[in-house]
Length: 608
Image (cartoon, rainbow, N blue to C red; front, side, top):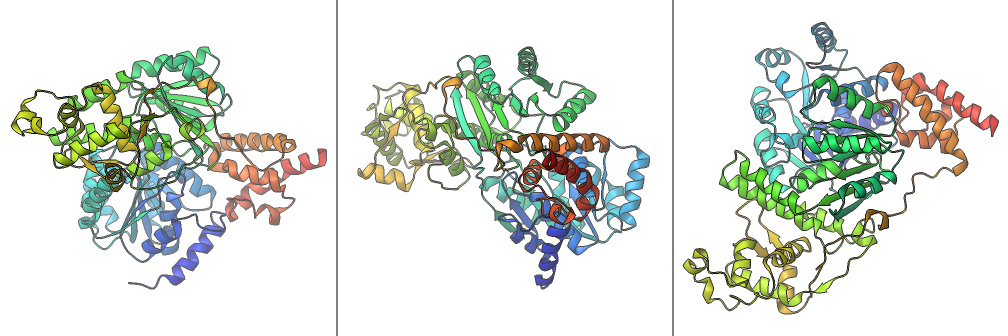
């Protein structure tokens, strides 16, 4: 394997000179170093952790051509625009561009003027493109949103599955796959499909501590939604709905209430969807009301909230969707409403799916995990991260930490559950365990002689729905483990064993009704270190950024992220040398944008 110490040193120089950052974010440098060493990589990094830099920097260090496989045209175009503003030659070939434009992009790639080529999986895997790429000095293939390759993942796309051919088509070219959404089963599947298991996996963690997590039982959903968005009146946000009809209804409702709300779903024309997405990406204060057709790869850092008006399909989908908030690291909110109708509809969707019995069973158990999260009696972030195999103390930034619910003593009921699971071999799901506890006369119980167990019929005083909630909360708090990848059996964890011995206790939420949104407590929303008197300067900088973005036909954040503008408002640079120290200012942005921004800052400081 090559000595990568020199390339890694060059990588630091590229990070600073091109992208304007003085140091790597946590997790980035190890991934860059491994790619520069020529190994296949799967990097699972939380949204906002800077996945793109992990393949963009090696592309610039190594030279040659890096092919970036991306699922959405809008994402490709935004990343290419951002790279060009940073002084990097980048091109995309996709169906939204004319034949002549695609030919010109290809000419620039083959001439060596563009080290990064963004392309969709469908366009990449044509015989003509494979043959053409084989004649280029390929140094890396980077696959963004890599969970799409796995049938275990929340957004499986058949065209992505075909990417498994890349290893045999380009055996000497390392592959780097990136995603923010992959549990252990999905990671194993990606590794097997892309690399045949021959690669290194990096998991940088799933926590997004800047996002306040909250769940409410649905009561009057329109009032709950209105109360929430009124707290974010000037912010961009996303509202997710289960159906196209509800998407249209919700967008119309918010518009009547004075908000700039636009619907987005697969039933709208391509032109309408594109126009609505463009407005969301470029204009302030726009709310997109969407089905899951919106969002994958949306790289807008200043989304301040995500509101789920309905229950998502599973924990991975929920994590992926809430992750579209707060990518800039500033405070953001994720609120979800859920009700029994949601659960019933999600169950129906699973049953109507074309998957086999095992697939349906797996999806039901994944939905169980999300419902358990909704009913979590302790820190919600802890329940979310435990699903992905991470542990965390109470976070102080979720509704349960901020508004602790009233708890019921449930140790005796929990011990009944645990004893029944233990006596049946720790291999059955919740439905069968509840049937035993309630003394049900089923063929399965009779055939397995489970009507002879000591716990048979011991839980008749508790109704079936309450038992389901208790078991879901036991999963959420770590006393039970749910086998998502197998047949959904419940097994006892170390914490559960301690509970059986009497060395621990279990308390649960009996009343799952939530306070109205207007009564909820939230974490302090500290948005920046700048003084209140500098707010006018910050607004003037945002207006300048908006004007420059419109001139160039790009989203505002491509010019500068909010963090850069906050840095300007705080430091008030007076010349190019001081401006070069602003967050995200590399050589190209210093050359192209220092004059207008320094002008606004000077005008403000002289008037102050």
